[in-house]
Amino acid sequence: MAKPSHREKILTEGLRVVHQHGFGGASVRDIVQAAGVPQGSFTNHFGSKESFGLEIIELYFSNSREVMAATLLNDELPPLKRLSDYMDKNREHLQQDEMRNGCLYGNFTAEASDHSEPIRTRLVEIFTEVQHSLAYCLTAAVKAGELPADFDCNEIAGFIVSSLQGANLIAKGYRDVEPLNRFKHVLFSTILKHPA
Image (cartoon, rainbow, N blue to C red; front, side, top):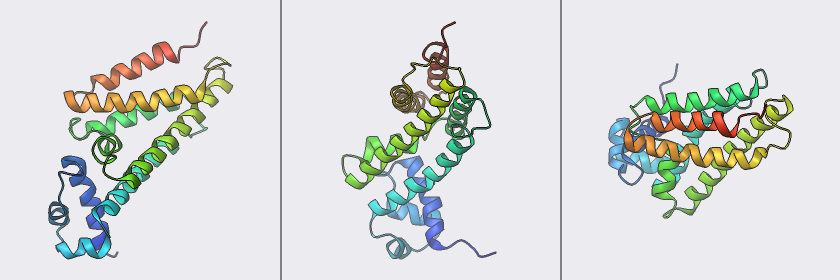
């Protein structure tokens, strides 16, 4: 089996370093040291730190897409179960580091979207794709009779994206999972509660 290229090492280790220290707080030197490669390797593979940032966002999003495919978009499972599983997977991912690092998308949105239009634009596209996946799941819940026929799936999907990002950020601040648990409880007990 071929050993990973310098490029792969820079991306995987760089993602970890940026997630821990922030995009601005992680220097190119920090990234190449973590990857164990010469500093010139970074400039050989990435035209700028911004282009590197875009690539680690894609690397992080590839995992998110897998989670969405297994949960929100998985037609084999009851729709609201899919949504519950999606939220649980999100929480489990953030708990891997005791809630210290938070969500990379939220971190980048807060830190880099004022300084990089390509990063800001890509984050908006990602939030939109997540919203579409949530709306797909909620539409399936309406069709399955789990939600009322007049339920505004797209509006609530947008609300879930915004609220989940807020809960992620507050959980990071508190270093506690409770904001995520509270959001899920309120979502399922009130907003997604089918009237009898």
